[in-house]
Image (cartoon, rainbow, N blue to C red; front, side, top):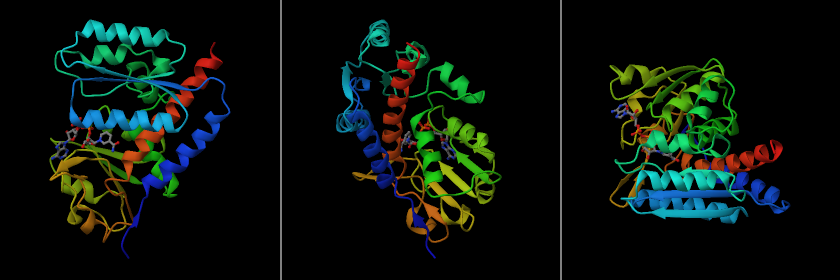
Length: 281
Ligand code: NAD
């Protein structure tokens, strides 16, 4: 039997509708500020879709589109201003940043209580130490998808391909916390094929079309494809979807799998940040 498709779009829609209903009855709307530096075409698309999702959910939204050559100090000043702004509960810096700007410095400047991307080292540390607060949106969305389809996580072999701070590392930590046995693979892994064959749940976050083929996937594995590559004007994941779906039990499509969940989790994080800021007043 071919794999069942994990419909991230439908699951994300349900979450967004629930958030919209909740926000509808709020006097003060959750406010998200999104900052983009430069004109990277993918970043423009991501930022616009985040802004659209915010407005659809009834959030207050501010978008900052800054010039590629902006001084790091000016960006830090803007973040400091937003940290103090009462209308803003979440601040998101679209990555990547231009090379002359220190990503570490910028992410550290975002107040941990408004860090809806969960990339500030305070929140990253909280996640690692088992005291999570604001959790990176894409990894959170991956775990939510697994929960939505009802797959057991505890005791299962999970293989994560990719070790970035944005996806690979945090998703591995989240699943370790759920008692999975987690292996993290990356570009220097000696035998990716052998590692992947052991996976009950395989999560690929690389950005390399066709990396995960049918012959490296265990029968009935759950496949979560985070990767996005654009080729001939079309979007592709890391997984050879048409062939892998013949042996997997569940699989996410690209587009329409993890991507929509990232946005839904960002909205959820902003709502969480607002609630916490109000509680701590
Ligand atoms: P990254 O470039 O920071 O990390 C890629 C990782 O892949 C690295 O850890 C690297 O070691 C590993 N890698 C590279 N080549 C490999 C190989 N041949 N075998 C095994 N591992 C290899 O990227 P990222 O920011 O983690 O994003 C990964 C992918 O996920 C990208 O395609 C990105 O566009 C996509 N992404 C999607 C969403 C979403 O919402 N769907 C969100 C974030 C990132």
